[in-house]
Length: 292
Length: 311
Image (cartoon, rainbow over all chains, first blue to last red):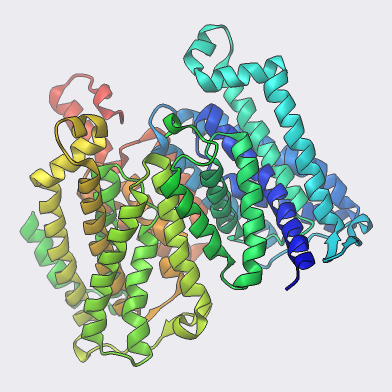
């Protein structure tokens, strides 16, 4: 195993992490602002993969691009609706009812997957643009991986600018810090919550749409993704977008390097990482202790 | 009422057919699992997703050595119980470093670790095919004997669990659930109590897992899966979180959905999902909690809606 191959594998990990960032940024945003733990987030992500698959099947390989636009919107609307009509009704009772409602959503959505797409894994037809790759010394980095890094970088910058440089971003941060005072200042916080939820799910849907180029849509696969997402959020610190960026990249890289050492048990390294973080810094690398 | 129940339960296998007897055995195991689980969720306020893992772990520790011919059934049985309890202690020890939602996620991770191990160590566990053909002693061969065996163990366990829940220890757990900080300030060692509750719950969960493996005579990865962890959650939520009989009722309800609606349509999980959401929104303390407050309201004649609310 030479150094070049390790660099290549690291880049593969970065591409994976970049994609997971789109998923976990939404998870963190919802937790940070609305203080809901959306256990159904990965299921929403999976829905986007399924939608991309269907559109590529329906409209040919370039139909993927339609999916790339539409899937996140559908998922975002679904997220907003579930906040408005389900999650918002159990606010103020702790995390337990939220998780149960999310569980119900997971059950329902997985049945929808089964009903519409059946039990067999589905592979999205890629547009010709993604056929090739970019040769670097250790191997070939697929165009889809580069695309994944590109989209995530763009979204990370956009999120940063939005949250720290715009007035709307300031409102979001205010609502995260103190919803009651923000409400008293004349901002409709419950509407803001719906918007944040919808946006975060849109982001997760975007992650799914990007992942459709590389990942199969599988029934029950959302559980595995959900767990990885939670490991990231624990490593990075819940409620922190920067933390989920750091966590995603660390988890992506450790996973793809772990595959080299223990091909079948790469997950073990993620667990060790998570347990180490929990012992040393229980609130994550960039989380705040009082969020617990 | 208790005597009536006892008579019905004893007379049941002589009246009903073997498939009903099997169903009732399964219900008893599921009831034990749910009540054991509620020792953490309802009593202590710890939302665990790790119980599916413990349930499956006990099953695997029992089934793997016996089917692979390493040891005989009684040893494997004892080993399964002891090791699962130790695993629960270890899991609790590590996960209880965290509180709230972080605790839940960490238990989920542990559960998934057990599931992954069961799935990947193919030559030992049979992977996703599972292991079948567990040979059980002759007194467990017929559904009726099996039913009485399960019934006795579950009845004894439920009695024990009830005593634990109503003991000073149980009330301490409730105090921790209501307000951990205040409990700590009255001199209760919160973590130690939580860990003990988790371990006891793990022991009975392991017992349920072992009974289930004896019942199905095989072990499969599903026994350690996330959906296995969801089962007692459903039972507790629907049946009633702050009630002893609630989870038992919920377990029966879940089994009914699984068996009777599952026979009509393969989409029964979404029905379970809809029920979960509706109960959580409109009946936060489940069926038993709703009934209790209804009775209370009738008794007092006044409006006691405030008492229905969870904290």
